[in-house]
Image (tube, rainbow over all chains, first blue to last red; front, side):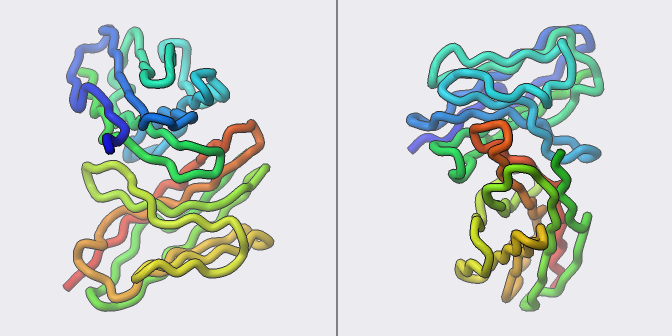
Length: 113
Length: 112
């Protein structure tokens, strides 16, 4: 079975550019999460969806960040404009039920110069 | 609010036993997870506790006390490959949907 698929795996961009990270959750999983991981702050929850609807976006740092889930098999996390402090590994994860195990993608490592 | 505390780092010897503690304060508690994360990789699931007591799975065991807001992960017969970060995570139903909040992680180094 395919796991959670994220792209790109690595992205290097310059400050001010738009960044779009993509995620395909495991088929049949109703919940999708976006996390950001840095050495300083650990694994932070940015936003999560249930049945394509955003449930909690309180972790989204600021208006520069936005996330969408147009259908059950695709989600995007967009940063516009990007800043150096956005440099981190962004993980997408999905699960099938409320208290179920969370399955992570391989992550997208973002470097903003 | 939510607060999860675990030690930043630990060191142990190959073949030994190590216990990684986690304390938490959260609303709407509905279970506690432990994840393992090797450097440069994604977190992977180790265990899930929702009731008090010990859950054993091979070399790894996890314990939960809900009244104390406390859990630990016990690793036996340590191997070099167990060197990794161990993340404690609490699931909260406060805002519906099973929001999973992670601690900072404990970096475990296993020495020969």
